Image 1: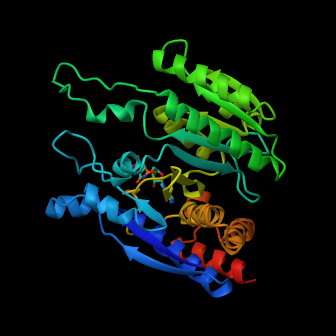
Image 2: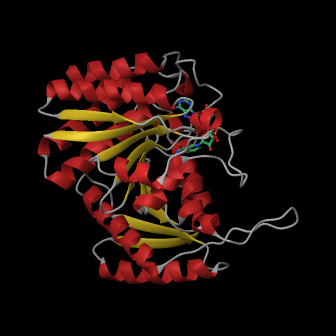
Image 3: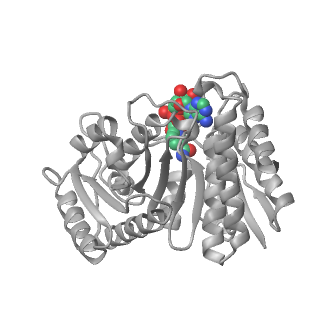
Length: 355
Ligand code: NAI
């Protein structure tokens, strides 16, 4: 089948890892009956700095007509709007398309060392991405030099969708041998919004009682993430807690260079690595492209499931196993203690694909 993919490379290492992922997808087109038409969009914090141009609602309507969006990374710490916040189309797209769930799988691959003792780390962190404290961005209350606040909003409707996704993901993962379990990380002892979230979680868990469930306060749950990560299968949390916890989880399995993500609603999907634009290493050709390549594989899986396209699903699986092979055999990227650059890592994945 032919798919139209909107590509937004963005800032810093975004364009570098996008190039690597597109090279891997090109190899998939050669090997499978797949065809991609790419439509590039050059929105970035850097473009805003140079021209004042930023993504608009009508740009997002146009981008949203494509089958999926591949997104590199966006944002530069010194490029900010009049409100003092950084420019980042990823946050606007989440609101515009109602992308309520960011799926962030984390797996300790053979050949990669974890900073903790655990051996089998294989979890899916699901971060809610449309509410929580990010929903307060549209607040009318103006901050002053003396006071500023961010409101945490949680709704029943989004919680229901989010938790149904979590239980359904646990069911899908169970087919490949994971326990089939969902853990909610929350703070209902202190936040009213989280009392509602916990209540809805209990209701959804009761409807999905073929899947086990647990709940921890975010503070203890974060500690378990480091001391006993094997206890987690699917982990779900609200926006800001999920943001933090997903990066702790990424740190357990080799860091952000290996952490992909899929921001999805029922109709749209934006696929991007969990990392940002990494200005500290941008332009040197040393970023690890694995997270972006695995995000492209998640895009193929999502397209395959939406369109009943088994070829796409097969291609996704072959990218995932090529990444596994490349991580086992090397060459190793610098964030994993090796010396390989972005291109070399992508080439290793491509040659494992064609082996
Ligand atoms: P970051 O994720 O860009 O970098 C954190 C650390 O991880 C840095 O030391 C970086 O060198 C390293 N790193 C990240 N990706 C890597 C890769 N693929 N290979 C090797 N090392 C990698 O987070 P930071 O520095 O906090 O933010 C930089 C900019 O990115 C900011 O402007 C931030 O707002 C933006 N950002 C954008 C995101 C997005 O586009 N979705 C997500 C997170 C941050």
